[in-house]
Image (cartoon, rainbow, N blue to C red; front, side, top):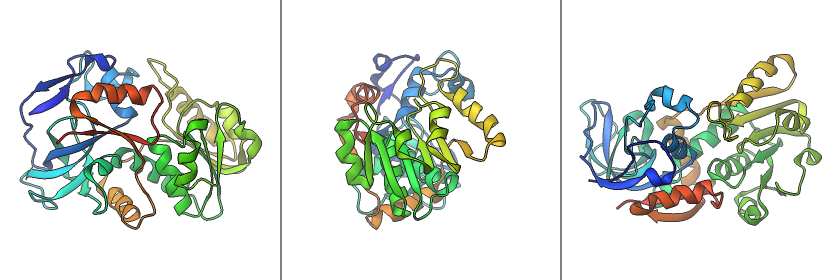
Length: 323
């Protein structure tokens, strides 16, 4: 099969389209014939091996253990492992796989769900990683409820575009922060107010009951200044560019500080599971959430798709069409 592979860490130039063996699913895995794969910051982290703790987490210290990259996937079940009971060949599915920038990919059964009936494969591939992060941040960490004033920093990106919609669905008054050129998208997704990150000081528009910091560029001090005394800050990752901590230092400070202040400062890492994917399916099939797909690249142009993402051009999500 054809796949996008890398034999070392680095920029998109390390990626190449190669012929590799079709993977064999384990007993608890499904082999999916990939129709489309989503692109997100996690793919960049695995491609570059940055920050360095990514390599220590089992992905390979000197070089990637799995040369095929990609996580988001939408496609058709080709075969199933002996222990799989929820799927059969021919089922249309989506979820979080292993090496999805390829014609076939392995996916754990527990990370796979039936594809929303009203989405194309390209739209469905834009959902799993980003939407699960948004749903769990809004629903579980921030516990957003009707009437809450919610500020979302990084509202036009993959996670942000879903967070705006989920928070609005829960009845929140949403303020989104993004670049001026993407303000129309954030407004269309359901934000009641849109701020330009380059000219508007979000601290002057608070206080907010909930802040979701997705882009990772604001200090804890500024974020707390815009928060109510009992408000909740959810830090979704961080992109400060450091090779060792890469934004995790801010998460660690928040964890220490939250025990000494009235505000809830919540570092957050999403959980990859089919139960929450099915919850997103319900929101999507009822029209409450719509994937914001910016561009679709062919498999051979995966490197260009990742470069487009890290250059900051993306409005919502970028997708790779495989079939």
